[in-house]
Image (tube, rainbow, N blue to C red; front, top):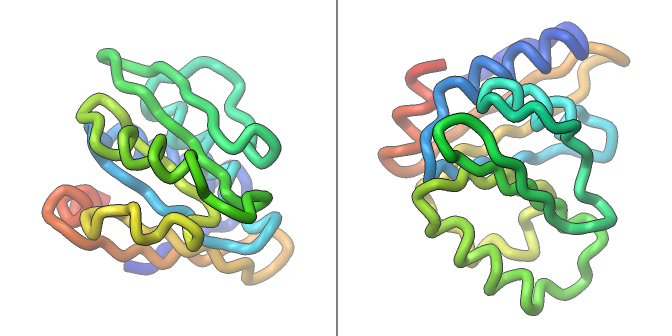
Length: 150
């Protein structure tokens, strides 16, 4: 599935719509270069999950966890600065198995073998300064259900 995004508000709105669909146990891999819009999309997803905290990129902290509607949690990981996944791989394996947590992962290449096939992958490609193309693919029944709802 391909979606054209025309600006920050459009990206946030799409994220909020996606967040409104999510249930616990969904894993989302966010793929894109620095500045592509991954954090903006994560902020929108948080809005859709009813998270009222200021969502920030976890580039320096590696992970952040937020609490949303109906006790759902959003765990947001960014492995950009991580050279060796080490203990983070074990933590991630625990989190993705939690049925109350939606997991967002940026720069997942280091931990790809830890992630289940049942995940939604959103590749963000800048077209212009403000426009983006989202290429969405899913593997597994849970991720495919989410993709069909979009």
